[in-house]
Amino acid sequence: MRSLFRLTLSVLVLSLTGCAANLSAPVSDRNMPVETTGELPAAEAGTSALPPQPTTYVVQPGDTLNRIAQKFGYTFKELAEWNQMADPNQISVGQTVRVAPPDGVTVTPISIGQPSIGTMPASSPSAPAPATTTGGVKNGPLAIVEPYSDAAWARIRQTPSATPASKPEAAPSAPAPGVSTPPPAAAGSSEWLWPASGKVVSTFSNGETKGIDIAGKLGDPVRASSGGRVVYAGAGLRGYGKLVIIKHDADYLSAYAHNKNLLVKEGQSVTQGQTIAELGQTDADRPKLHFEIRRRGKPVDPLTYLPKR
Image (tube, rainbow, N blue to C red; front, side, top):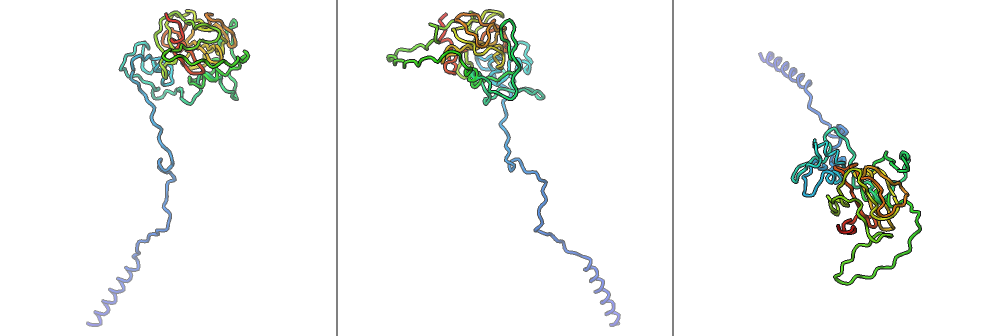
């Protein structure tokens, strides 16, 4: 009996030993590298989201669709299309206007860093298309449309002048206290003349409107406000349509925009009151002349120079 008990106990011990041999403890190697996908979060990769550009604008008193379009770097025709406006003149104060292209539409807007009216375009590897002439009037080049900025003005102002350098002017004497000094006229003219005979429909607003708008009929004469030399005649600046710029002296330029036809060419000398263009509606919401005077590259209010009506 005792022998049988010992035999049974031995068999039980051997069975337990065999089962234990087949079991294995879990093993983890803490020194193995952690597998990664190779992608970093945006914050770790050093990327940051750009601030969203405004897509709508609320119409303010005195706004026109053309003025709103220039503010955001587009043409009034683009805004009219995006807002499904049958009549671009019918906008009201408080109205919300889309000022960004809809999804799927790609447009290159005017940006602050881009050049502006006032400097001739810098030389580039590819030259613009040659200008075409019709009856001695320059109509191009039209292949390049440059956005407006205070640098496009600079490039146009820096065109070489054939006139000899003027003698330095004597420093003006200080005005008496309490006496206002009128702005100086351009050289060679006692005063500026009105470039068109219509009604002023938009006035100068520093920072928004750089000149005045004068209403008129298509084909009305546009006259040189003062004598000088044409330094630009073309349609290469977005928002201005067919444009003429006259350099009067070392300080003054005048600009005449939205014309139907240009009657002068670059380099031509013009006299005060000479017809230089026909009033039009190019890049504008209605037939009108946009007129600017610039003194040393900065826009000034033309109404302080033009004679009172």
